[in-house]
Image (cartoon, rainbow, N blue to C red; front, side, top):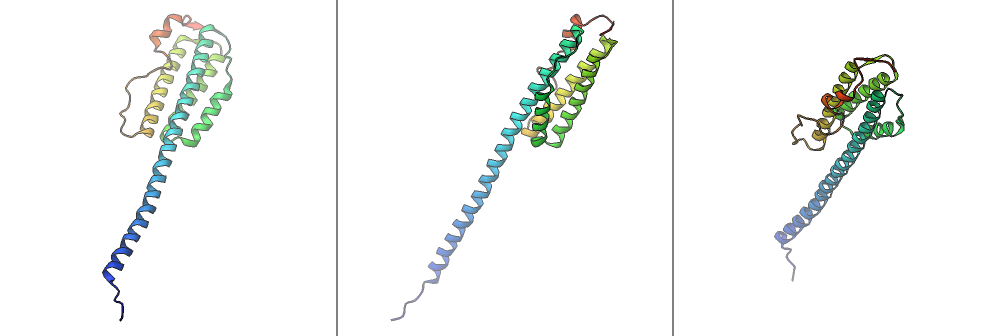
Length: 175
């Protein structure tokens, strides 16, 4: 008696096994990609927060030194470490905003060290720092979630000129 192979069952079983293998493989790829994206987003968030924290510390010390008419007492190591970490995870747009803000911080440090200096220079620098911070924050928000709308105002960081002006020295000061 010869056995008849039920090809319909063999084909459907083989198809089920193949579909399962493909599903497991695809699920692994998609899951790994999702985990990688979450890791990048988490690291970007932490790195962006560290950069902003160091920016605020530098800005406060420079502003305080300017208003007290004294040399700044900055330890640049944390600022530079934040910049290097940023270079590892930032998008091009975020890195460009950080570079622009870094340039403004450098100009502010030069202003603090120089004599004579003026209130107008402080006002212009504070406005540039505030605008640069807002550009950085908006670029960072988009890089973390492209559905986030940009902020039209600054939260934290350099105070508005109206908050600093009462403490600023007269029109022309010397260091």
